[in-house]
Image (cartoon, rainbow, N blue to C red):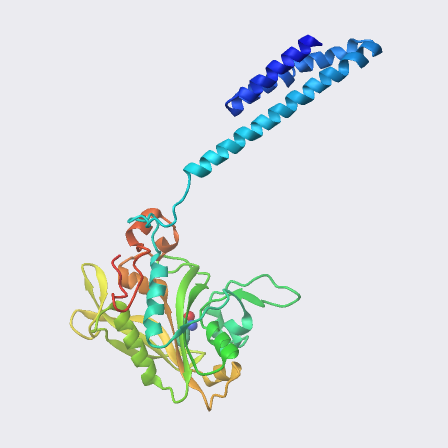
Length: 366
Ligand code: PHE
């Protein structure tokens, strides 16, 4: 009995002194492990006579419980101390200035979208967004593309599996134009918005990716005409490319949701292998490049959106954001935009401190 108490007291003292979780664990094995001395003592109980067992068992079990409790308490105390130490050493001082060279960069697509928001905000446009998982009505029907419209076939649409017997009811939007409908339906007229965002088409090569970005523009008001469209696009592109010599050419075109429709070309020349916008495409050494689709909003679309086309007219345009970024910042492969390669991001990305502003120049230093 005395011997048991002596060993127990020694074990408790050692546990209280143990300085590390490993040391506690070693003491646990020594006492309570399979070969531990308390475990061995517990085993002797089986060989005892009932009387003997009744006399000795309580003390052994008591010792086991005390040692086990002491080990658990010591482990907890050491864990708490370790946590306190880490909390004390790993403090974050949120009032410190951010590092001068942050590791991450702002993706050119995000940067360009910020530039667009800045330019159009100055012209009185609000920024709207819509769902990327869109229904057939907003993406096609309300844009004057009924079920059998041939233009639907040109969109290489990703459809969701049919549900509730509904054929091709939901899809990944193929353009940002459904945001035109949502805005008119939700807010009525007048409207002056841009809608940047992701769009999806089943298409992939150096200049096409299955997901890409567009920005939609929509103006609905009274007595709006093509002159407003041309001025707006010219003002936007001059601000965006930071050049006064941007020259536009409007060509008749066709979109189901605009009437008349105009394709907008922009003059450029090739400098050191790179297309640089500016000047008339008819000037020597220059050519025209197709840049965006636009037109006067089709009366049918205004009707679908619940407005009276005799009262309200407007124009709309849609342009590829990735394309704008490539032209402005000189990338030549669209696929690299979405590879997430840190070297590309370091090279083409922007500092988070480079907030585009009209006064400082929307074209921050890359
Ligand atoms: N939605 C058209 C496209 O994706 C672009 C467009 C938008 C054309 C608005 C006219 C008016 O090709």
